[in-house]
Amino acid sequence: MIAAATFDGTATWPFEHDGSATRVELRTTHTYDEPGAYFPALQASLHRDGDTDDVMYRCLNLGRVHVVVT
Image (cartoon, rainbow, N blue to C red; front, side, top):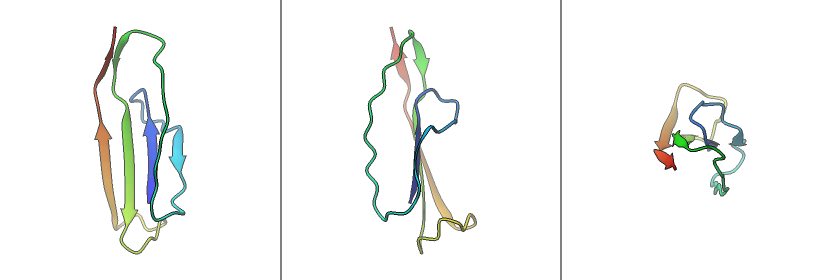
């Protein structure tokens, strides 16, 4: 499984897991310094046989949430 997280919605994915484990738990905290609307996201992909180099048969998931900071 390959997992990554971004907090500002720019798809720069600064937090990543390399895909070497069969199960991944990501925990982190983030503080927004400015008021506004943000779209943090978590992206995960897996391959049935665990082949992280095979881009053809990955199962991709993307979770997003809308955060409003006042």
